Length: 346
Image (cartoon, rainbow, N blue to C red; front, side, top):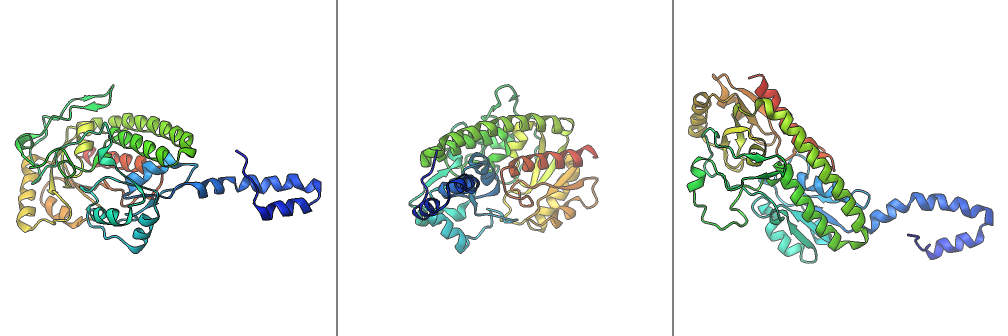
């Protein structure tokens, strides 16, 4: 599409010799990408994994802003003034939902009234798993079968006492584990909702969003196949994680998360709880105990002291990774690699 030249630029063209006009076309073309980016809607995202998916779909059009950057965690984040300004200026806002980013719920009501707000935990086609309150230490021998051809799970399957646990909620925000992105098939469902939302807000760039979404879908399918191959040799070895964030990865790939040190990282366990977990590590024969970059990795050393278990690090919220369209893939490969490296030597 040709863009009209501004008034000042028209005057300068008229005063130039005819031979100089073709030269002007070169800088005009060079700046066309910048002009497209300037025309892109202001899009704000909550956390790095979501920012990565949105970035991939917006490539060539614009770059979304990120609220929870660096090594911060949505579990403990406090909104900054710059974040508030971004929310106020945004045309589109993506977040997982109040079950994960509780700190955003009221600011979105107050500051995001002029924006299209998409809670991705409402994306059609998501697999949602019950939140495991209290921490599960049963061996997960009854992991659900996965249909590798269709990419669907038997979402109704539950573990141990979870099947009998009444959360006191309907299937709404807070009634399920919100680390939804740790299954590439859920990432595909969220990407579809992201695309629909962006196309509605910015129809001029619909073809670009839709083309990028198709490329992202293909990459997510390839990533899923890659991770299945990576973890297959170690998927039957039990391990313990710092907090209960890995159900979706666990169900997708049939791995054996035997328990967590804490259900939520906002609540650091006391000495009695740590002692109990230390005992459970020996009883379960857990081969690895995984820390997380943001939260008290020293606790893991206490838990494995005197046992044969090894320690590793998992980063479910990409605290140590650089934001961008490739972050999601680096995040998922990083989790798979950490599990494979720790468990294969156990």
